[in-house]
Amino acid sequence: MTAEAAFPPLMAEALLLDFDGVLFDTSASVDLFWRRFAENAGLPAEQVLADVHGRREVDTIRALAPDRVTSDATYYRDRPILPEEIEWAREYTGAVDLLRTLAPERFAIVTSGHRALLKARLAHFGLELPRVTVTADDVSDGKPSPAPYRLAAERLGVNAARAVVIEDAPPGITAGKAAGARVIAVTTTHAAAELGEADRIVPDLGALAVSALEDGTIRIARRTP
Image (cartoon, helix red, strand yellow):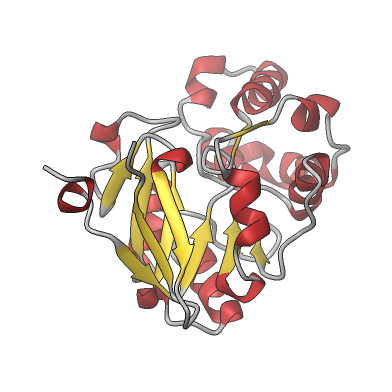
């Protein structure tokens, strides 16, 4: 079976990209951050870590320690960025090139993290904030709500049904599908069996060949060896 038969190419007016787990591997610093939170909150670290991927910090705190939402959510929103959160980030194959080559009106980064952290991480790799971003600061309901992806599509001026989302976590996949977009999942943080709601599943960003047609339409296909 050819790559195109197994993965029929998708055409999109825009790409809506998650950050953590899709463009960059931030798992080491995420693990450190939430282990410190668990210790401070008196919670088992593994219980906390099982519920953090793809969600805003405030939503995780609300789920695990609702009595701490007011004080902790404000603190974690305004806290200093840890050096490890920048220095430990690693690029997934092709991420920087993709961000540099996509037309600015054709993509958005949609993250459950805060804008300041996103800006600092991108700067570490010599990148500026894209024209359109949606962060935890921009929505009252985070993933798995469709609100972040709907807002990204709106800011780009496209119908979400004509966009493709790339995600790594179940809450993000649910959000993308609920927004009406097609979703490609990468298995960087979760097994394929957990990502079944997605339209396509690939190992990582490097498995995708992304190109722009003459009219600006984005073509996403499975990369051939």
